[in-house]
Length: 259
Image (cartoon, rainbow, N blue to C red; front, top):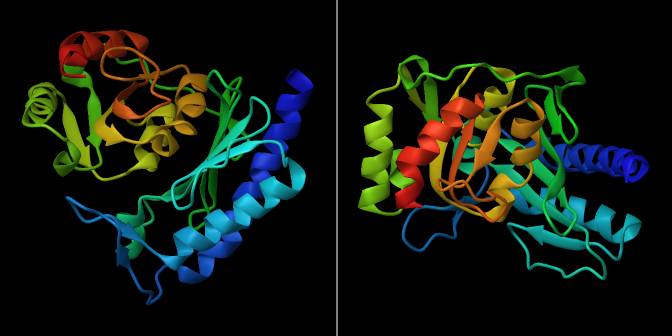
């Protein structure tokens, strides 16, 4: 599998390049925004759709027996164990407001777990990769050791995304004890955990394409990323990512009953 992992990683970078080429013309330009949400505003643009189409075309050509799970089109079952999990623009709200806190997420799942992940930010020129380690533009990443909640820097994309009052209250209880709380970031916040600048991200209501690429990056840098009760985060739901496994254990102990 080691040889194949290198092959798959190189292909994932090709996917990132194709998505970037499709997205760049749309960022900070006038473009139509469609709301696909039911309960809350959930934007999608032609940039999202064009990027996913470009990646799907490459996968169908190179690995026709692989499955595809993407945010914008129907899932495709594969003939074997491998599935590519795609979010063409994670952080579309940031994208349509001109903020660079978004990225393309690409994961490969071997049927048990995501074995590699890429978060590509073409505007800033940053590419985060994970799987047997974690890197930003080829430079190894290491998360920060911070076992104390009182010293921790915590992020969450938006408190409005907590899907029950109990989960919002649980997050607010933890946030009240942290050194610093920042909102926004989407996938970028998780890469800051891997980079050692943020100590924890706490969220809920996530989908598999929101999480799978980020797990190998956070954990490859020495952190932990699970659901609030410590289970695999690959299916989404409630998610907590920490740079320090000790802080992760504390947060799971506090948040687990709300998972």
